[in-house]
Image: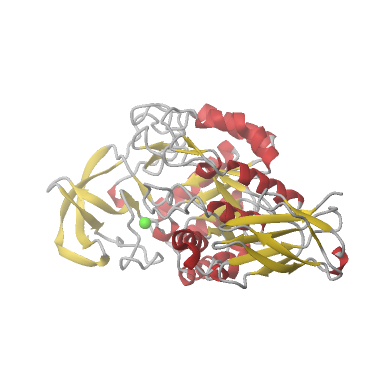
Length: 482
Ligand code: CA
């Protein structure tokens, strides 16, 4: 959404109390008032156990409605509560984006035997030993739901790989063999072929599987009124599937249906390959920018701030970049742990919320709490959200020209009086920089609004002034209302 702000409304360590949808419903007016325009909700359908975050997906059609896997509700609540949350968000003009996990399924109902061959973990193109009969939980009968919403039952032939053989009690990656079976080719090349991530890997090349997942995409959107999807783990999925899935749901629900994909790679060339294959039809999280933030926060004053945007999606493909600081996978203790240190987070949020490029995401853990510990960043994020709406407008000039002190100017727009701002950040000593708003702003008095700097500055005849920032901090300057 143009000039929108997304919030990732969950973190990894939320309590398993079934309260998230209720909380989200009650929070809807506040989110709208803060300027949040879309909420990314976690996988809302039944996982292999109630405590799971949703990524160990069991039944895509059970949004907390059927007694399956030990409960009716999911970690986050019931289907009825989810409907209520969506209704409240829509009533407040906030979009709802569902996390769609289509790479794998977990928690099969019964074991099946089939032929497979073991492959090496770090090179899935290299086989170990001979094809043999193995047994795994690849049968899905959905006993609690039956045929409601879909009569499709999943079998081993719908998957391309598993990670366990119960006949020999072996934990390894097994590629399922047989006619038409094999890893998808349109996937990331890490580990030789990164089709397989975990659990029962869905065979997205299989026509009946494609049809069933396309049908689910339309069904979920029609049932719940989702405004878009966040597609999980797409580096492990054939890019042809991803492209066609997005096209199919848009054909049914409208071209405005929003999709952002999680292609988690810090390598911009890899992301550009994916963009080429999918024709730029979906947005992508700017993982390279996240890794730059992470590196900057780890390296401290030795990090060259002038390179902060180098090799990022927001630099190369700003129209597709969803900019983030942290998420449920990068937070401490998670699978891809690479969290941005607290001292740097205000700078990272200032950049993604105040720069003109990118669609920023605020992480629940950074705004509310992580593992039930309140975030120290809520106040600054609230301030930045206000500034984004009232001041971060108009043309932009970047000043990424110094190893420790960098910034940007937003020049404002004529129809919002007093709009425009100056952002300055330092990862070392206190700094200053001469920055210009242009001669039309000559003589204006500007002041700093985060509380970092007390003295005002007056723009000279060229609209230029020397702005200051404290050590290891940020400063945001706006025109002072005299
Ligand atoms: Ca896969």
